Length: 320
Picture 1 (tube, rainbow, N blue to C red):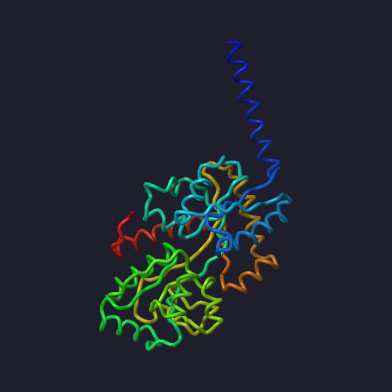
Picture 2: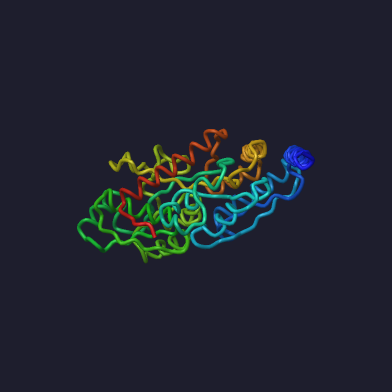
């Protein structure tokens, strides 16, 4: 009887301590794990987000880069973290959609490992060519590729753009060779030098190369034209249906993080989208904010996972 009494008291104290901890959140620094290298597009956005969150939540927010294995190393670390709101993942289409179909058994995490906190930004993927090549539009590129099977090379710098190359080849019957690089900037550098024939990239990475006038987009994989390149048609406009690919970032918390903490973080991230620094970053990179409530943010990620499942199925790419 006495034992049960003390057990009840302990449980009550434990419950009170949890409620107190949640109500006082945040009371110490928050870590944003970025599963890519410093200087990457995800990293640049995360650093602006960290500053904004620190200002809004009145607590330090630090960046911890854990690159490797297509973002899987850092993502797995975040998934195993204590679900208290003090360790978060700045995830992406690569880490929280594409990776599930490349090597799920080796990832160390899965969709249910996380709570979706908020979308941050998105940038549609486009097909780019060098400005001094013989083909000037998508139709001419496809015609050349079909007339010269196996000669064209498609550059890609991550899992998202690799699948883009493969799906594009499947949809068009183009016999192109996929050439993987460690990053999209490396792929676009070789495209500028005409070492490859075309490449897929998100607009935020490509903008620097576009500004030099060495490369240009000829089709965008989105449902409507991209505001930053309004003259560039969508693939659907050019007759290639069901080809919509977006590079996006979102914040995730380990599964089991209290709902009140997730809601507080979601509100802070939504507010961050309107900060001067965030507006400047979007103007510089051409990205668009993901302005969704918490329920819609979860639905967005679920739809992206389903979209990539279909791309893998249709492209014939085999999981590693």
